[in-house]
Image 1 (cartoon, rainbow, N blue to C red):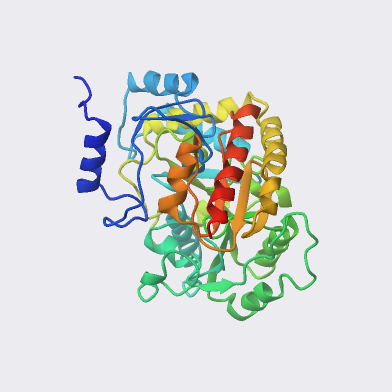
Image 2: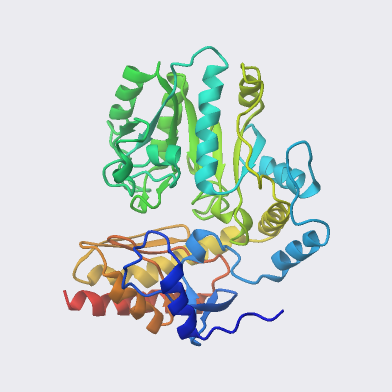
Length: 435
């Protein structure tokens, strides 16, 4: 059967009539662009333009698109089974992926619970923390301590630990669980940590540790809450406070896991291992939705010793064989490559290429960490104007709020980074000149 031959105009008309895009109004005039195919680091539009993808499909497609090894993993697995229920059954792709994840994650994270998306991985982590304390007769420990500028997903429990003021979910504040929030970590990855940087966090732990099940944080990089980088020293100090006050430490590595910051996991910058670790996005290198929540044998055994006798969660598509097969191949590709050199190369070029943006009026900050580049503006961008300008310049970026940022695939070439950063400068120069 051939593909339905919609013209670009027909496709856009049908999209406008029937499709609801993420964080968008059905009345929006912000354009969407029809994609025909993707290859390597390029997105080819149905209208013929080829764009360098600076977003890696929301930070996930770390090996780029249409990669032969990942394609092979999918097609090989498809010949055996695309899906089978995970209740009472198991299979090689899931078991092998779990083994690989245990090998590469820090500390004693030895149990892997698969789910469908990053937000659900956070839901699973929070439920693990609650059941952990319930199983020990400490059901009062049921609140979570999170951080301002934090973002952990769009499902209900995940929304409850996102920043309730500056986050994307304040409309739901009246119906979400009431969690505790500490001030955002002081900005600056390489800057000295102020002596009192953890005082507010410790005071909250002193006052509430008897009702706190866990602390959750995005290690080193607060992503959708502001693309903020902070000190490994802060993360190490927070981890020590969790130990001191008997509170579990949850690391949300959905945006940072598998190399984005220059380490396998951002926690490694601080030399710590969390009690619970959340993964998503990069796990399947942008091929199929999959997430994982890892914990230690000790936590798993305590949870399963409680009244329920098991962990109370089970997605229909848990451990999907196609997703697990491509995720395992993704990790094996990283293990067999010099991805750390690629991250260092990308980082150096982003620093050099984005530096001229500092001179533009209305630019507040330019910062780079690993393969993440951020240009922060004084005012929010006009999406209806800036997106077509990026497309015309031959690049794909998806700014939000005051942030124009890029997290490209690890395979991006030097020439492609140069075009990505120079086009970003040119577009911003044109946009900011008219303000």
